[in-house]
Image (cartoon, rainbow, N blue to C red; front, side):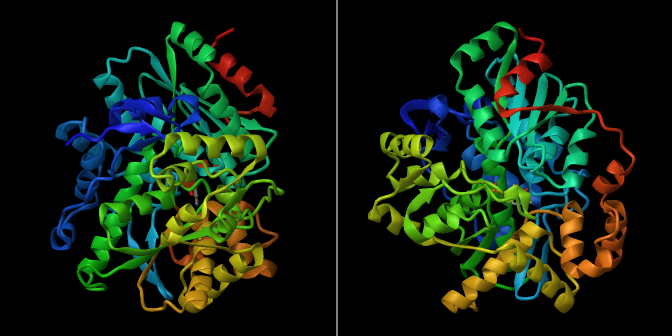
Length: 498
Ligand SMILES: *Cc1c(COP(=O)(O)O)cnc(C)c1O
């Protein structure tokens, strides 16, 4: 049966999967959600035999029902290929008391590659299916990792242009270098003198501007989004939770049907929402452990039922989680209202107007699938150091936030028997300085970033990822910087509009 998509803010707005992927964002700022979550009716013994690509087909075909088998299989084959440095695509590594699901083996060494290596293919296919003639302009706000992954995915893809806004002073030096050296004539990278939330708000504003859309259409363009608000990014992220479960089962680590815990370092709430969707498909997941850094707006929300972004924005060593407006939470809120678009829209209006909303006690009770907590900067660094000393395994800062929160979860709940999978969202090479200073500040704080990368390779006994070698000597190609208010102007200039 076909699955249709509807807007979280307007029950009247409906789209097929391909239309939802093309549009990115629904009208009035709403997000597309599937009208129902399909069931994963596959025996674990069958799943255990499947490759990553085969698993991807099983999951995606249940959501993207208007794509043909051939279309989806082609998208999957083009996405999960030798761009990844391991045939497993997402290996599961045991260290300490948990399984680390390494989602950073793609071209830009962060988990955004898991979805952004397939999104361009889904989008081009969706455009073809819907007779779109306009050039597609991908407009993206990034806290560091989405930007590069989207640029890598869309660079030189015919029929597309990509524009990325990042917080000029809110990303790691390696992240910035990765973006500003991006090749491809259809790419445009802009630093803004503001934070991620301002970049995201600016992008959302352009998306919802009907007059601007008309003007773009006349010029032969239309916007789409590579942010995790695009359903075409969310669904591919469900795949690796299913795959991880199947791998644990294949290794004999869990019995058939045995529940696991999943720990996710969270910012925009996309990755953990994908795990929640996996659970709702029937994957045996017990607790969804939501890990925040010092920007712990989600942790407070789970504790109190009040979402309140009125607080200082803190720059941390896990910049991809420095977010106070977690866009994808809206999809969960919508579900908690019983798919009531009008009620959800009221909460989102309150968020826009007052920076806060409080859910009802019944809705709060519906959050019992989740456990939220946070790790501060000291705890995060300590976590990296301790795991390295005890096991030799080195995680990045985001993954360390998750691991530190997992330790708090166990202490709080005494749930030490359930096997845990920690989403390992970035390679430590992407956040080399923070990681190496966590291991030994004295020894490393005077080294340059590339010296640190070489030293990290030695400690972790791994070769440097291609992504790091590439930027060592690459030339800067993008140096545009603007104020948050000037984002639309920057877009107009790049697209040669008035
Ligand atoms: C984007 C990102 C996150 C946060 O993921 P969300 O889907 O936004 O919650 C965590 N870690 C890293 C390394 C990221 O790039």
